[in-house]
Image 1 (cartoon, helix red, strand yellow):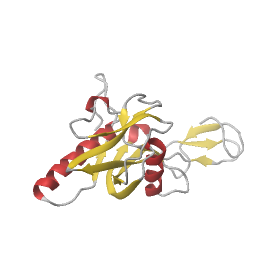
Image 2 (cartoon, helix red, strand yellow; image 1 turned 180 degrees about the horizontal axis):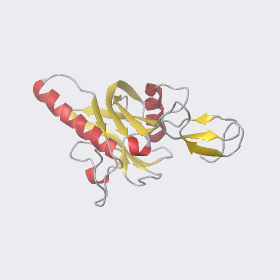
Image 3 (spheres, helix red, strand yellow; image 1 turned 90 degrees about the horizontal axis):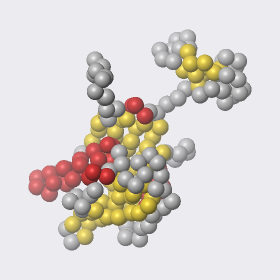
Length: 195
């Protein structure tokens, strides 16, 4: 950030009084510009037919990770709930109508200032089509998923957790769990872990 959105004067990155971290502060009007993580909200759309479970994935038509597969998801908008965001993103990216179930995964991605949340969902029909941010949309069984071409670690974690839960439920009964994880930026070989 270079300029204040209140008065257009330059900002400086300083620790304001009674704060504990650097913030962008306007040198002219004194406005403190707080920056907070962005919410990425999506769904895990399931279609079950003849005992076979398939997941709807989208092939990305935008960067980052153009051409890689992902669950339908995107940035939450102001004035909407997380469930509204999941429904909207699924329709925008995959043209799919879904029924939402419980929150399935909540993943912190601090190095890019994001929190990713995915809801379990059931496809209401097979009338889906790629939106402007998708090259194609397709249903995959666990074996068919292009695991080496998954766009983001949060998506891979969510998919693996879903199929692990599904196997446990089919064998032992029970229900789906809420899966949480912190996904840290991979270290380069020259970096050492922080304590």
